[in-house]
Image (cartoon, rainbow, N blue to C red):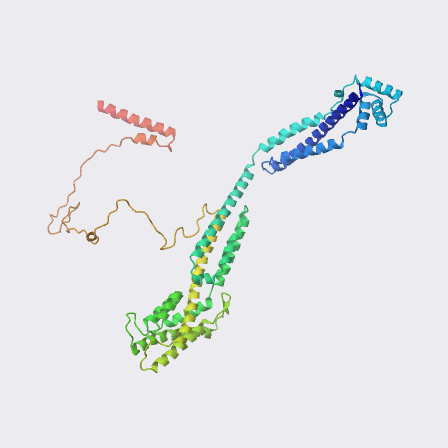
Length: 526
């Protein structure tokens, strides 16, 4: 064997040895990975879950990586391979010595003789005799364990786990539905607000409360979120309350109800019903003007009478408000975060302006042109703004109350009390709906038919009954009756066709009717 053949033999031996090492490392690492797969699968199956099989390839991949790294770490150098070959083939360090002599450059006759002896010996040896020495027990365990792990991965979730997962998925969908519909309800609420109501409400904060709601699988967490949202709405409604002003106006309404003027009593009624904006407009309309609605110039006496009515209303309202001060009811220093004038003081100011106006008018014999009522208009403007604010707060509390009702429906929907959720009014607001459908071939109704009404003559038509006077009758009443034979056909068939009748009873009914028919037939023949 030449030098190249000796070197080739050593390369083949190293390759064979590396293959055996890699095979053993791969089997051991895969065996460990499959054992980990079984433990992983058992962990999920004990809890009743389906095994996430996607973890299996990850374990197998890292097992092969570790096996490859182990094989590289255990690979042999030329000297180590020569020593292993000498030990395996019984060369007594012949191949290792030959490789060493070549590396040292020794080429004497004795070295050549030794190299030829080794080459002659290697001609009878085969690298394939090197055993792979695979751990077959580990291999069998790996095959069986892999099959078991794959089988466990195919098992579905247990009934309890599947029901819980279905409930979590349903809860996730329900919370998504709740958030979507609450967002729509808030948008509808904001669209329905007028300028006064928008000024009394923090619109952006309300939107942020809805955005804070998160979709969740946990029912308790979903209910907690809705409860927090409802608490915020309740706190906002509490901030919109104006009990002090409402109590003041209630006392003013009671005082107005004692007035002899119908307009004052009507004003008090609206205040009692908390129609603040309408009441303020009525009071403003009581203000005297230089012309009536038809454009006729009013006389001084007519203007004085109008001012007397206005003075009666403002005076009684101010007197009623003084009753609240005398009772020392609790005062609210702020309304909506802003320091506001006490309503009782505002009514006093309005009454004083009306009184001063009345005194000035009494000193004049005739008033030309328009009135000079700047102080009264200023006080009236403050009162109108205050009443608009109260009216906006009242309406806004009602709308936020509907929002709380929607949150209550949402909580019932999340808790499973209802199978569907429908928030809002379910349609457009009054006056916003349209119907563009038209019937084909529609003809206009003649105008002369629009007010026509069909009439008949009393007592001239046919009737199913007649009425006789007592004096014109015969005094005898009779009733005709005729004997009719009624047949009850298909009684048995309809009874037998019923699903709620046992078969034994059906059979008995058949026999009963058959015997009856036999008796009737025999009697007829006789």
